[in-house]
Length: 579
Ligand code: GLU
Image (cartoon, rainbow, N blue to C red):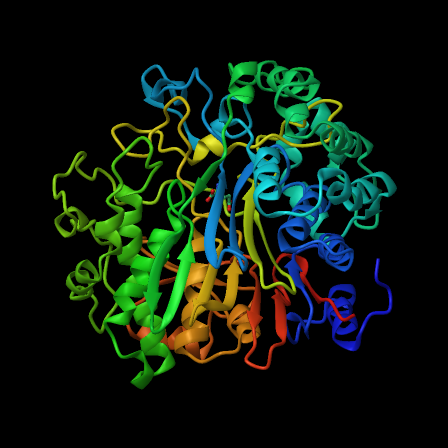
């Protein structure tokens, strides 16, 4: 590991160490770059870059380390979307390794006595667990674009899991929230609680079981996870969850064949243009790429350059509302339902829908008719529901680039903080509750079906200008991921903020609801900015914080700047190779 840190890197680490809150974690230089929410994960990526690995290698090393240090947001028990700009191929591709519903699934699984169950009752059970995709996703990315193997790339994570690390406030905060969920399962209680309580800040935390799981994957590749003893342990944990005495939970019916048959999808990303930029995002089953492109198309019909900040932010909220009306009604796994992607992305459709964007805040919108803007205007399923379903606001996002010009934007998750709460006994990782991202009430395009992938909001985004990477951004936060990425794009492109300022600005999230979420952490409520929006009719609702963005910008002078949060999710770590 490189220890002679240059001043910019040292500054970034100081932000992490002392929680200075005046500026984002930022680092600039000429080498490869990384931004994550975890110092150990960013260091793992830097180590791999310094060893000659490329951005794809470094992203896998960082992700594996995040599985150790940020285990409530992500890990091998979940899934995700990796967006890659390959410099050699000069193209952006995406690796969809979203969890799938096992073969036994149908909409009936989420019903009791014919009535849809409550979301929070499904989360901590065996029926919420989708077939994990992360390990095969990493393998696919490495096979196609990487230069190193699992043995090399999992080594930093194995070391952190084996040696341990000091638990910070964020780890303690999230496990405190999860005390009830983890208490239901003996394996989670043993790993993450002491006497039923979250481990205190400052605890030296080790996870040797996870180190051993990683060792098995390093030795046997993805097959060791999907066909070996790990697969058997996953199936047992889903079908007979390791509950604590007196706890009863719904059990799943995952089969070994569900794991063996799991497939990664290499997909074309969503591509759209915005004010001279080429914006690449994630296609279905994520709704992120489409919703962001659609909102940008709506905004592009206005000349924002002549407007005040309040006017621009008002239109950002209105565009987001309209994009969410369609997203909530139409977007799901496109292998199972006819998502009107071309219509939703149509600039003509945006021109029509933009007529609904007035000078004052609007109320909840109905979905439009994007089918009229595609070659086949027939509507296979009438939109039934423009309302946002219940979702968590967790997950993690990381950004990596290398000297060759490759860029990775990677969002991955186990859904809720702590996922289903089921740690696979003896394996050291939590299983996801991703299947709660399905819509519980049929008919809806996003209803649960066997082998289907639940609709996501994850939005890894890579922006090109003149054919070359300009910047990349992404965030956790459930459906607020879409608004965080969209607002950061607007802040940077339309309001002229630097990427660090764009990331650090107070966030607002309008998802076709009655109110717009705003952050108390950033002291937005009561500010002049908030008052200006309220004067335009926006009703604000408070939440503590929204998202935890990470990004990289490629500067005109040939340098790169890695950018992470200065306040949210316990402060991120942005590093750039200095050698
Ligand atoms: N399940 C969410 C999604 O795929 C991510 C989890 C979260 O951010 O809370 O969009």
